[in-house]
Image (cartoon, rainbow, N blue to C red; front, side, top):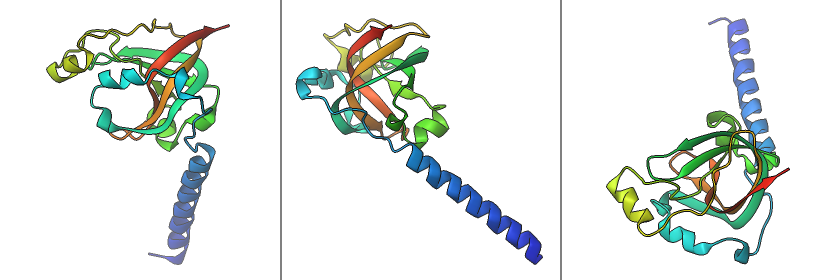
Length: 164
């Protein structure tokens, strides 16, 4: 390999690493606010499907943003993709694999399809009303990292408020 090709390849590698490091600095994955635990319903954790897959970063926080999309997960949770007003809530994986959205999951929104997920929702139904795409909302709940996907989420959601 010629010296010119080696230098070009080295420059490309350095550029790629620098972009990744800058993205990690820009998107630190920090909770927008620390709220007292009275603002979140800790009993919701009794109905979270596979809670061991979620690492709690902040017991209770709130984030605002626009609803980009909504999907009903097979585990009974409602998945809301939120374009957050506070971009610091995003981590690198949110930016690269969830299109810059914060994942928000009210639990037990609808009947789950899997038997093990049904157990988590037995005797419980969410009181959270689903927003519509385009709504500006405030979400209050636990701020976690989904260890299976690597992105940050608000999961479970204690409260969802529509904003003007």
